[in-house]
Image (cartoon, rainbow, N blue to C red; front, side, top):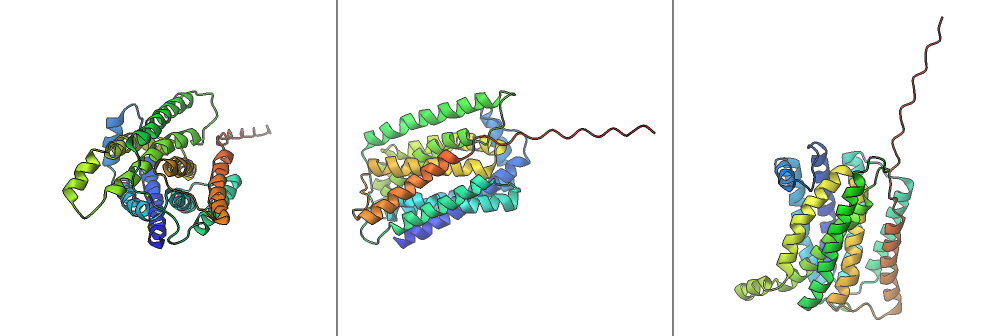
Length: 305
């Protein structure tokens, strides 16, 4: 079990580093848009810094496979949320992004939620499910993908309104978070098919499942959508929102879909549920608008002699 905790913390580090490197690369690129995906891909693939960030994200994906084979879904998501603290620190150091007082309080609440989830773990008493009924997975994932695409398109339309207050990117973060939530369930499904015995049969079994195709869809659309959103909004806010939505989506619907039981002991159950509830509260209190830039003060006229 503790190997899973270590893998989750490693995945947090890799994901945070990857997002920050991609954000830094995007700041030096021309404006990208989901309406021109081919141009977006051509621009980002020409940036060595962006490629470095993508490699870090890919390594985080590999670590996440280990996590889902050793930890229950709900517990894993509680640990993944802790990566937000590292992300904000890296964003301040490498991107010069400043956080508000409310956002710093939110980070403290996230650390408390992490502590609750870790304390709810017990070696040998948590079941780790390996598979879920495919119709149930599709019933959960397909409407979620449609909702994420619709919400992102709606945010794009509102962003083009010149008279609207500057957005922090919460809408973008929720939309991408829904896609990555589906991706997280697909990663869980893929991890259940990983085996060193009968590799050929395992590959055929995996290809007959919906998981690789869900990963392909969320990978392509998530890449395009997240890069456009990262370029426009602060990484220190959009990624925490995305991560929170992904974690909650996976913890709740993943636990139900894969049939993983919550702790039987009242104290451990209370800790895990309270940690999840606290993460929800953090998301709801996130500010949805940045302060509008103040116009420069008019220069004082020189008095006539």
